Length: 444
Image (cartoon, rainbow, N blue to C red; front, side, top):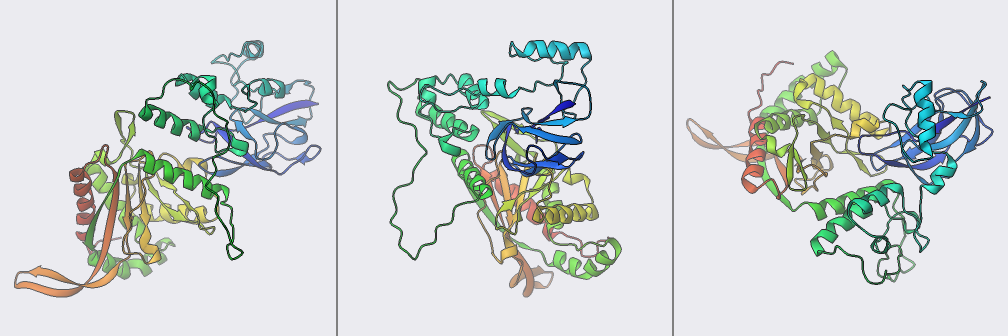
């Protein structure tokens, strides 16, 4: 019998670990090729891990709710064959020859990995050794220890970092937040005596029998952490502008039946907003950026995220890649596809990554305007309000007149570290100009 190691897959460029949500297969169960073995979650998306081979599960190496680094063996699958030693999972790229594979195995004892060899997959024994604990008995993942080493954080100081993970475990987000505060507070040395480490506790609250206690689900906790981090990271400023979108509304009302018949898709206002934003980002590229320390990273790709509400009440932000390269029909199809699959929890990890700007539609809920929180590491987010009929003053060649127009508010929240009022206000006004200049006779 051959034994194949199922490894934790890499779920995105910045994802270094994942949490095991549920094992679908137990030791002794048979599994087919590409059949889901377990469900995992990252701070980006939930996903299934399929079996790379057909065989039988003989061992699972981690429990549910364990946080596991990528490329780590999580289960052993026995297949028909003659090998006695676990082979590399076919799910992991394998380009090494027999010679380089042997060299990689020899290097494991030295904790090294050859660039041309099969990616290192630790055995259960080496994994336990690579997950050290402090003298206080506290667990630290290799990623946390790497961050601590990079930031010159000693063991005594590391033991004082508050942890929000399971059993008070310190996570990557905890370390990044601590490092940010540490720099601001000027603390660079360990305290004389380490404080007792415990999970942060809220002040005691008196709860009567008329209060229902609902624990946040995993996604809501992630959203909460992300929003708090964003407000902590970026000084938010929000600008508003009122827009006359009468021409755009009239055009959509006129063509939506034909569009549905011709393309089999319902056309909403979202692709029209995305189109206007993409054009404005080309005019003001500094809004299509992120911040890295004291560097501003101006993105050449226009990857526009659109906040989508889920049936659970949570939000997710699928990303329209290279939105400026798509025509209106293409934008409509992509928007509808992403929105539908988001509601069915069928998005792929790469479809919620790489965004450079975000649009959120508060008008869906009948809201006139909002003050959205920036989706880090981006520097701006646009909220589109409800479209309402209002009396408005129009300038004509015969003088000013009052007419009923389709009006809406746009709200732009931006990071004042890199986007000042002139840039943020000018960009927002440009988006409004493109919407107001919409051609009511535009062809499909």
